[in-house]
Image (cartoon, rainbow, N blue to C red; front, side, top):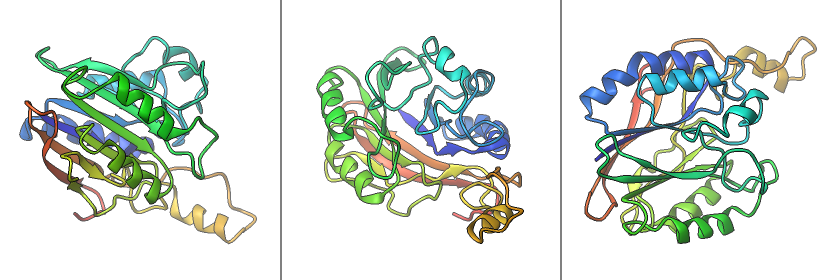
Length: 268
């Protein structure tokens, strides 16, 4: 099985490059399942709407994960209850709308694919203990007992927390990737236990920016200039950033992980 996992889709630029490039990526790389983080996909880079969610599914996305911006659009609170292909972090407060992990089927119905969405505790909004939640999920979604493959999106601010999560899941998950910082790291590898890993897979959007936001306005905000306004996304040519993971169907672990950087101003 070949899986494509893409980092945070950022604003209109990210949606445009995804729409333009995803169908061909799926064909040329024989992708069986697509996971994207969609929490920044709205025009202002904050949250995701029902309309955008449906657009992503139409172009080939199978599951959408999220993070700290999941509730930035009020409508999400309602439709996430009905749309089980849109996940929110599993370690949000008990009783939060939606779900933080779920088992899906491959298109040919032969394989069960578990997808887990977690959010770090450090420098992020207050959540339940992420490692306690991860441990509980591992008991419910055991590789090759409950699922054939298991993918984890760890949405977090700091590298150490993400790396600890990678090693925690090593051998228990097919792949663990970090999202949130919008900057891809260069540590793409398969860990000792067979889990594919990258600390952060970056964003899909305009990299001629400050983590996807207009660079001129961002600099003004850092300089505390009076004419600086609320952050808004850069709208130049976008880059797709993520990973392609090839799996061993017998073990559910990774054979190969390849970093993907496609289009825009970022060079692989």
